[in-house]
Amino acid sequence: MKKINLIIAIVALVAIIVGWLLGSDERQSEFSAQPVFSDLQRQIEAVDAFKLESASGIILAAKKQDGNWLAENSGDYPLQKDQVVRLLNNVVQAELNSAKTAKPENFARLGLQDIAQNDSEAKLLTLFAAEQQWSLLVGNTASSGNGIYVRKPGENQTWLSNTPLSLPTEPNAWLETKILDINLADISEISRTDHWRIVREAVDSEGGTSGEAKWQLAELEEGRALQYDSILENTAENIISLSFDALAHPRPYEIQEDNLQSQVTIKTNSSDIITMKLYRVDEKDLLVLDSETLDSRWQQWVYELSAFNAGRLSQNIEDFLQPLPEASVDTEPEGD
Image (cartoon, rainbow, N blue to C red; front, side, top):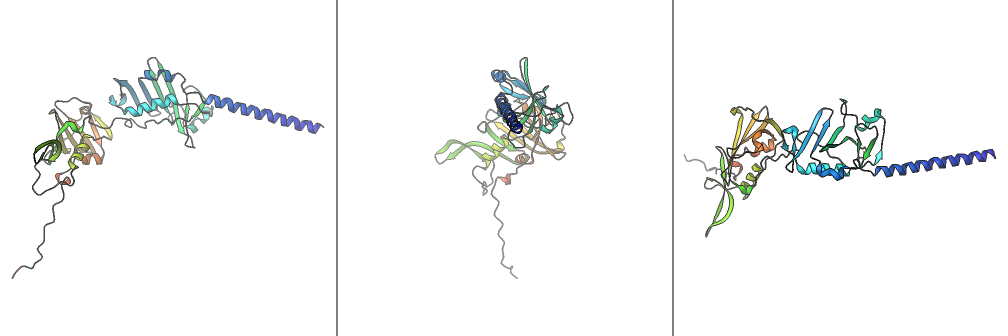
């Protein structure tokens, strides 16, 4: 009898424990649905700055000015607006989906140590709006690939959030890398000093000028032809659409003219002139832009270009043309 009572007691105890665990899971599930920042959605439009830091320092300090996002730690250079908007939306939507460790000795496993620790792998994201701010430590991606570990500074509880938070890894990552803010239709002429000049002019038809503007190679030698019809238009588009790899130096910055590799000049329909000088310094391709009539951000920097983009400024006239036919070889023997 005692044995039966003991078994009943054990079964009852197990049932109680299982019920408590299930209830705990249910309570945890209910809590996991809560947003990381419950009050952020109401104030997201007021957010006018954010900062991303790591143990090695500031990765990105950004501010909103006249509707644009600028990188304060890169001389107020414009940021890609879509990247910033996506980040802010994701932070608003981020949820605490499941609780993880609350033991500080385990923070490193999740990449959530305070960034004051030199070996911390965490990134500290802080949003600012007037007198209010929201901060979140962002750690490793879960081993399953679904979700990321997060922790609020000053709290020991860590969480798995299923909302992806894509963050820049270095200061240049989110900069607006397209250098010139100009359209091809605004350009009338592009030339490379001592090499070639292409102009956009109305095309002549049998009945006279058609009025349709087309890119043409000035002083095209008789008997030579372009590789294909759109090669000059593509060249012009490639030049005005150049992107940089990095902000190399703020100007003024002295570069010896002996290092000049190529000089390209752009003329607009309104007669503005933009000069692009490509230099080769310490195995890096550096670009400097100037204009006497325009005042733009690109005059404040020396840009580092990829070899591919540097090549777009170094084309020769033969790159546009079909190759010359091989000279015929007279195979008849010479007379005695």
